[in-house]
Every structure is written in C-alpha cells, then in structure tokens.
Length: 425
Image (cartoon, rainbow, N blue to C red; front, side):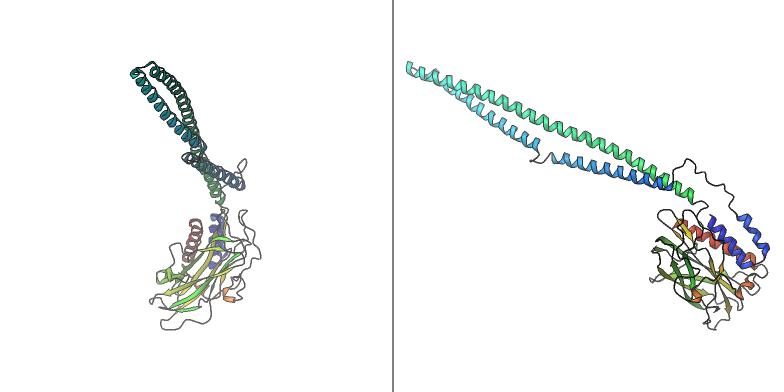
C-alpha cells in the first residue's frame, strides 16, 4: 500500500537524517502499473448496481410473501371461492336429503297402492304415487344441479389454489435468481473497491493524532499514563478510526534493542488492554467531523532498563469507511524520551513531538481535508501538536552506531502494521 511506503520513508528520513538514507525512497516506490480503468464500471455505477439488485431481490421477497399469504387466505371461510364452495356443498347436502325423502315417499305410496282394496282407495293411492314420483323427480333434478354447482365451486377453488402455488414457485425462483445477481453485484463492487484500494489509500490531511502528557524523562521500572488525542476535520464522519502506538528504545550506544522491556497498554474507560500485535489502541467508531476524542495510553518500562537509554513512541492513526474510502495521518508523530535511573521521578516536562513530515498526498477515493491542521484540533496544548520542525536530544542518540538500522526496521514495521490494522478493521 502506498501509505506504508510513504510513512516508512518518512520514518527513515526523520530518524536517521543523513541524505544517503533517503535513497531508500526509490526502492520503496510503487512500481505497479496504473490500473486499467477503461471500459470498467465506476465504483458509483457498481454501487448503483448493488442497490438495484438489492431492490429487485427485496421486491421478489415481498411478492413471494404476499403470494404465500394469498394462498393462506384461501383457507379462510370468508374467502369468496371457499364461501361459494361451502354454500354449494351445503345446498348439495340439502338436495340429497330432499331426494332421499322424496324417494322414501314414493316407496311408501307404492306400498299403500298395493294394499288398497276398494277402488276409491286405489284411486287415491295412485294419485298420491303420481305426485310422489313427480316430487322425487324434481328432487333428483335439484340434487343433480346442486352437485354440479358444488363440483364447479370445488374446481374453481382448487384451480385458484393451483394458480397461486404456481406463482409462488415462480416468485421463489425469481428470489434465487435475484439473490445470485445481488451476490454477483456485491462481489463486483467489493472486487472493484479492493482493486481501487491497491496503491491508492494514502495519507490525507484532516485526521490528526498526537500524544499528550508523555514525560520526556521516564525512570526504569516506572509506569506513566498519557493520552492519544484524535481530531477529525476531514469534512465527513470517519466510520472506523484505528489509533496506533508503538514504543521503541535502545541503550546509550544505540545498538542494544530494549523493546522487550517496554509494555504499552490502552484504555477506553473499561480497564486496561495490551496493545495488540499490530500496535492498535482499540477502534473509535463513527468519529464525526469536527469531533475530538482521547484514548488513554500507559507505558511501563522494565526495571532492568539501563539509565541514559533513549526511547521513542510513534503515534499515528488510520481510518476506513463503509464506502471503501480510507486514509491516515500524514505525519506519524515521534515522541522521544530519555530513560533515567530507577527510583527517580518522571519529568514534568512533556516529550516534544517530531513529525515524520511526508509529502502532501491525497487519493481520489479519499475526501478532501477541510480545515486540516498539524495539531490535534483545538486543544491548544503544545504537547498535543504534531510539530513539523524541531528535534530532541534523544533522537540523535537513536541514530548512533547501528541504532539507525534498528529504528528504521522498527518504524517500517510500525507503519506497515498500522496500514494492515486499517485494512483488517
């Protein structure tokens, strides 16, 4: 990533000073050819494609739910076709009962006719049979009509349910298709953002990070608390800000690495946590433009740290946004301190920062800085400002002997891990 190359070069320049060290810049330059963007959709176009695919998917889901509900509604007694079927079924039942009664009347009148003796009784029985048979025929015709009506109502209800079921199946297939299209659109957008992020996530103004209250002299075996101060003047809310802190120290000669005797922790008010392997001091969510926030830091020096040793705390921050934009503090602050004898007290004079002044760089995918400053907002504290000039007596000692190579390595690892922290947040 370009951001780590710029910052690594800046660390080399600030710590070692000699012009010869600047020769590392070409070696660290980004030699990757520019991405071919011709005929490729823009990020905005891909984002719109994702929105369109999401809407199509959502619409299909809504339609499927509505159809499923309409199928459920066909079970309700008030559903017109079901109500018609129930009425027809009831009428068919009544017609069946009337036909049965009429048939029974015919049977009974036939029995009376057979039992009649006198001509008068026979005539009356015959008249009753004729009427009963007419009623039975009418009842049979009514039952036939009622049965047909019931059958038609049953078919209409069944056909309606089948038709709705077909539509549900089609809607479910559309959901599958639209889900696949949405997934493909999201992947295309993610791939485009990832491709656009290669070499483009560079330091930009508007986000500042500073250490406030770090003593310029710290005794061996002592623990000191200070603050990492963040200020956002980028003109937009930063979705995730990752503050980072890395401590490095050497003995008086500058050749012996004392990092194993340094322990850095951070706190957001819920206890103290060790700085992780990527030197992250937690994550600040949704830092609004114009907002200031603090992260508490704690540095502990081992009792075995030699007096007259020198150290430095690198302070930095990077950010990532949900829309794929990212960036970081242009000037990684270096806060030198001197190690004093165990039993003495930390100095009341704060460490004066030296910024790793980097060339102004800005990505097309990062927002333009608004009211960017070299300090941490409106705190007004000289210890909380990333000064671009000046030095400390501790810095030259870090460059003595093999110390330049040690600090170069430490600084490069720091900024590389800082960039990874932003990528992985």
